[in-house]
Image (tube, rainbow, N blue to C red):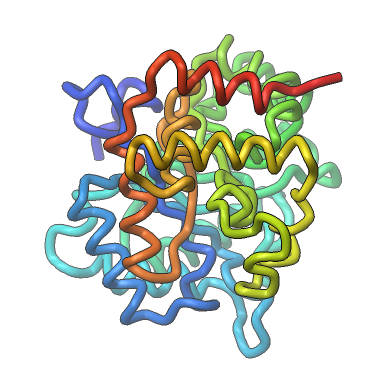
Amino acid sequence: MDTPPDPRVVDDPDDDVPFPLALGTNVFGWTVGAPTAFEVLDVFVGDGGRIIDTADVYSAWLPGNVGGESETIIGRWIARPGNRDRVVLSTKCGQHPEAPGLTRESIRMAIDASLRRLRTDYVDYYFAHFDDDETPLDETVGALSELVDEGKIRYPAASNYTGARLRQALAIADRDGLHPFAAVQAAYNLVRRADYEEDVQPIVDHFGLAVLPHSSLASGFLTGKYRGDAGRGDSPRGSRAMSYVTPKNLGIVEVLVEIADRQRVAPGAVAIAWLATRQNVIGALASARTTIQLEGLLDAAGVEFSERDLAELEAASAPRD
């Protein structure tokens, strides 16, 4: 396993523009069964997608599930000849019922179980899913670094960490000569900018970390279908999407819709494409329950923003005091 020199380079090294969409798979084994998941994966990769993201806890919340269902489905797809070499694979640890927290023991148990389910010898990015303030950060950083040395992961990474904790983890790795966090997942989208841009982004930019924004579509709100009462209850995320309904956020969606109409794409594709313009972003995470949904998001690859487009989005979405 050859480690790429830069964690932000996950597509063709000769291509300066990463593919804008990273495929989130929290719906696999929940609202999406294996046959549809295989179709979604085939279309995603066939259209140029590379990054597939999952977690060992997906989808333990569903009655009858135990966690790892998403990884198991992806593993069946990965086992098909040639598929592993076509993708950049990301998973997470710390939340599985049988391997909770970020102790060395839990991390080692979790990675071995994930690799079995994914039917691969290694994952590219391995995220600590949520910070664990009950485990010394030194122990977590050290355990993840060991997995790099053992060839089980390429890059340790942090999901949902505050800027302060991310900086502390990077300092520990530097002090002890360990492999540092190389990538970050954080909630980031056009209606939720301040937390990331003010707290995490300064550290990301300083250290050149790769970024995979999650919640890219704000639980579907940025698809445009939740304006007013439209779409309420249409999906398991409907109530969360409706929580974003404010005058300012509705204004952002109106701008999205106008740009999408000009570009003849769906509003969600514009939201994904905007994230792809942000520094160090290697793919904006979003999931799809059908290939039709996915194809609408894949159109993000064809979005070309004018200066007017970007200025309108900035004016509508910039964080305000």
